[in-house]
Image 1: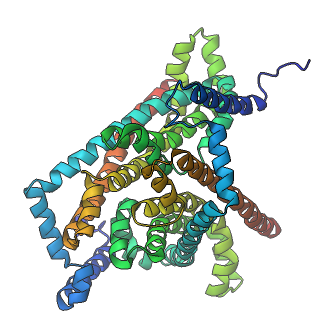
Image 2: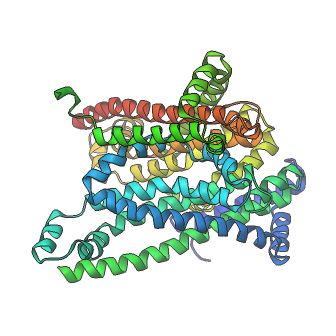
Length: 259
Length: 257
């Protein structure tokens, strides 16, 4: 028999499976209210039914569409703005107080404002995501630009690089890791805000689906929706991780060749 | 002029210019006024709402939920994080479970909490605790795991017991990490409190803002948002204040070893 390795990572997996098994058993035996905690097997079968019938995929696609629009819009607007604010001191000083005034607003509170302006449509959610992703992207980009090694900039100037080329070839690559940090933080925020805005004002999307299932007391379906959301969160993180590795490989190559 | 040298004049001016444009356009156009009531009216209705005590009740409700949820999660997550970081085996056993639960956005727990706890304070506190626990827990585990083993070995050599090592060495060394987790969770707590209040209604600032929007009392809605922004800013300042006090202690504790 194989000896039990007490430090193996497999133990963690076993604990997870044991927890799921325990859930299944106590639910089936009625030790906990099966109305609130339906057996795991039931949740899984509902999950796969919903996936294969395409119902839940439709909801996820709606959410993904909004999330992507808000996220990329924020990146397109706030990375250039952050670059400009990092490079031009006067611009930073002019906008700093406005940014610091808007930043402490908790993002969910923007949902009612967005509803006032855009109604209950996609634009409302896109705006909310756009607003809440703004700060991590903006502040990290500014920081990234400000932390660029001065020697790099001076050297580039000595070699007569124009302002445009200086930004494209020196500042942007050097600030890239920190811009990435901002984008990663914003990814998590995006997922939270798409769910919030769909819970508060929507008739579709995964956030609406979960809350609506609860309100109609379709508890199994609610858990299946949450499982879907967890899968989605995990997948988005992995995609970002791959993208990050690629982007940073380019970055590493560039900094190496310069040395 | 010297005392004002530190004031960011261009920044103040551009904020004032923005507010002035807002004020003028709100007063000159009915359509704009519907969406952006003049900033002077927003301020006046904020003052009125506070004087009439209407907003004070909502503010206190939100603050109570915030503090109970935040402090509870801090207590739970720091304790759990130290245990999981200190006892390596406990961590290998729970790692997969943690990584399985973490990627799901915490707001998705709101429906479950409603189902189990109804729509009272306990439900809002529960989701706040759930959401705030993750950053604090992960950071505390990291902090404890990153402690120089020589520190602990030295403590052992001097015959310190487990409890003393925990108190004198592990906790101070992990402290900066714990603070980082606590700072991240501060914003998260405010998000969860306002979101739950919007979803379940009743009272609280989140509910107030959404409710005023639905009854098209736009001025009141903005007044509520201004108050929430002040609250967010104030809590952040309070945190920095406590942090600097605690960091002074931390410096003392680590300097003494």
